Image 1: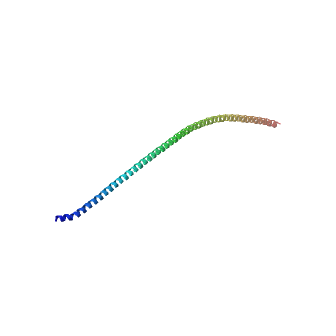
Image 2 (image 1 turned 30 degrees about the vertical axis):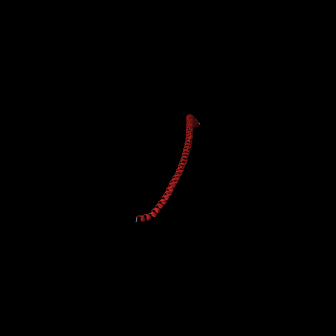
Image 3 (image 1 turned 90 degrees about the horizontal axis):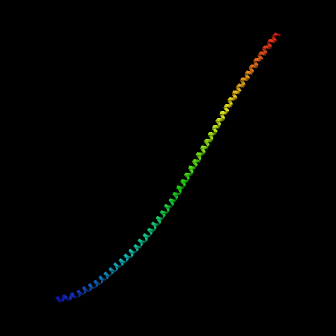
Length: 174
């Protein structure tokens, strides 16, 4: 029984061995393909990593350039603003000086006008006083002349009265 079993198991063992060989070959092929896929994946990963490194480097350079451009633009803007501020300060200072000069000139003109007006007022007061004195003198002279005229008229009237009285007396005597 044993030889029969051995005979029967012999083809089975051969089949199993052939299966093992086929499976080993398939395993080797799969292992080779797996290694190849791993290698391919590693290469793709390395390529992608290198591309990413290159992209990062490029982006970093662009960012640095943009930062430099931005800093330069800020610097230009600050310089421009600083120049404009200085110009405005100079303009304000110039205008302040001109305003003070105009204020001084105006104050001097007002002072001259006040002095001129004061002198004119004084002259007008003196003229008014002189005219008032002259007017009073003329009034006094006129009053004196009227008084003299009245006195003269009174004297003349008195003489005429005396003459009339004398003539009347003479006429009555006649």
